[in-house]
Length: 145
Image 1 (tube, rainbow, N blue to C red):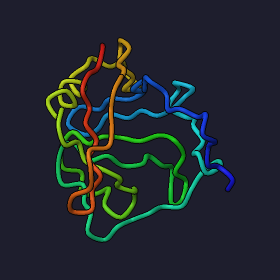
Image 2: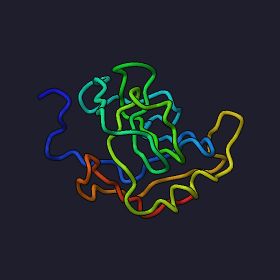
Image 3: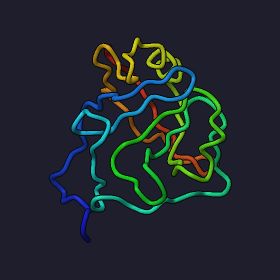
């Protein structure tokens, strides 16, 4: 099937955060590091997968970043607080189960006028914890600024 990697593919060990907006979100997943790139594993983009029971209720919700309907690539964001205006517009695919303190600390990193971190921020380890209430929780263990 097109877009599905073969058995030799391994996810990147480091995800650089490209945008941090205090009390809103941290964004990453762009392999170019510009905040404008990143194709999905399914091709250039994929369709929204909006679940009617999932909402951006607070800090730690993982969602796909997009530039409009059905434009999901590789970029994602983690909310730093309630962002209900994003409900129905962004595919929610998880929630931080453990490590929310780290997420909030990333949200406090100094940024420039374009919301880019002034120093490198890297998520070096995250994994799927399990499924609960429709969410697959990710555990973010460590970051380096």
